[in-house]
Image (cartoon, rainbow, N blue to C red; front, side, top):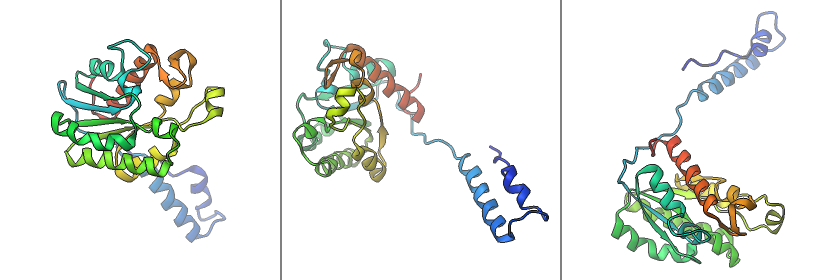
Length: 231
């Protein structure tokens, strides 16, 4: 890609008749060049996961599919979109604190190429501190990585009474921080968006069938953008 031209305003003031000093012009022109080059950097892509690849969905009742009929959970729907063999390891009521003790056996049994982690909501409901939840999730991410699996971390809404009342939930900040620190793929604003829409909820903390369908579609789009999923 050809870098963008230097902004007109900077160029005009850096001519011999311009009013800016040579040092100021040099700094501004360098900054403009760097910004244009950064805009040409390729998007992050990851190795594609072929149909039939084993993927582990580790989560709580939202992964299990509570609020919808059997077969309408997002792991099943995502499997239909991608062709992946997705193991639904969602346990209603599970916490990040407990899931870190069960992921090892799941990794050994299924040998997944990728783990999608959807946890933390029940920890928040039990008033565990975000710092402790973050460290539990970090351990889960590192265990998956030690088994050679890629990790996608689904952000969970921060507990907010106001957010529930006005139907405008937002992700807990710890997920963005943890993904950056561990280099995990972050899936933002999926659960928050669904649970903010009364028409997509079975109850205040669980999607309905349509909510799960939209979750699966949003995950598919994210994984397509990364290069993981085809279609």
